[in-house]
Image 1: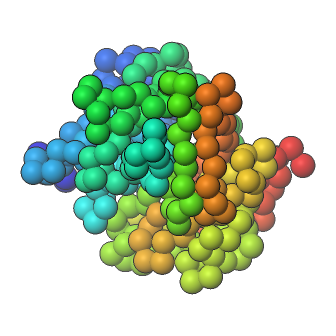
Image 2 (image 1 turned 90 degrees about the vertical axis):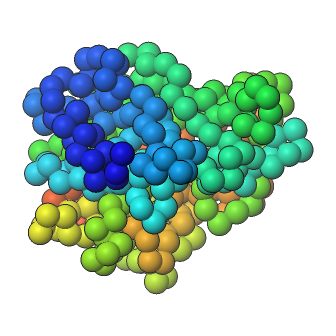
Length: 301
């Protein structure tokens, strides 16, 4: 199946009806009335390229849409097919003394999959995922993860929150090694790669000077269907090592919150690793005053 056809099928599914009420279609959406804000893919989506099947994945968010219906994420970007919309994956990690890369699918060391929909409505989706070590036979479940996705009403933007809770599936910790990227990722559309997407942080920084800075929020934006639009991500002040360093790629439309930039740490048995983020999809260019106000509300300031 070509990438173009895959994208068309996904959009047909998203707008075909109340996807939030059933898991049969494999796609669960937060909605404002009849308008879709975002879709969580509970079903396994195959790689657009049959020669590289390892890029297939479940348990990620795509598409995220603006109020006008413009898509500001990419599920299988042609330049980096291992980047999937909004996803959470550790890059440089060790389990039982052995490297496991959950981010770079081509390494075929680790992967993440959806395992259960706990509940789903227009306002809330709760799903369970697993992080698996694929270097063992059978694969070893390293982490169990729960995503709680909640719609946040807003008069002019599409806003939703994500709470990720990761727990050890065994009595062995997962060691996260110092690295320059990984964890919560936001991938923008290929159009922004081809036509010049931009980034902005609350500190006024961009790709040229914002890499590994520690902002409250980052927005990536560009033109889709002839109009400017974008998506911002906000880290909660209660997150580990908050404000977390961000990886702003210098020429590709993706960024991530990457606490491992500051050094090694471990996710230990009996100690859940909880991360909170707010996502904001908007039409037009980012308004710093509006985003700062929204972050302060989110942070409880």
